[in-house]
Image (tube, rainbow, N blue to C red; front, side):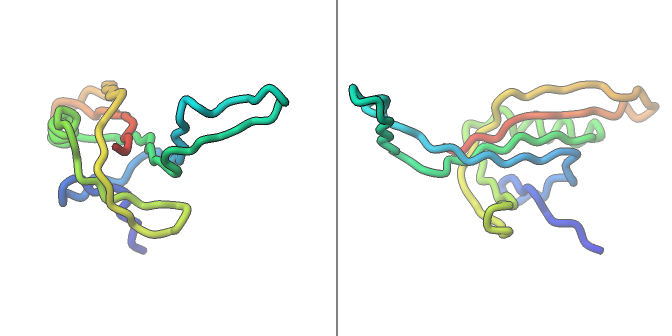
Length: 120
């Protein structure tokens, strides 16, 4: 049985994630809000902006590669979209990069890396 390729950064397939959560959010203008009559008015500037919270258990080699991706201003990301059950591509950046040593081994450890990808 083949696994789904959840993430691809600039043409490089990433390892299978431990967790993968896609959130779609609408961006609203400042002009929206509650009216005097008590109704809510939404001025949606952009609908369905994607953010993906993901974590991996990786070797030191993958830790180094993920750290390099974190330092880029923009990444071409192909991601599995659970809403359409298809792969989509967009420009994203890495936010909230966290690294945790899970187990010390003779191969420089097993690491847990987590971050949030945010769409431009």
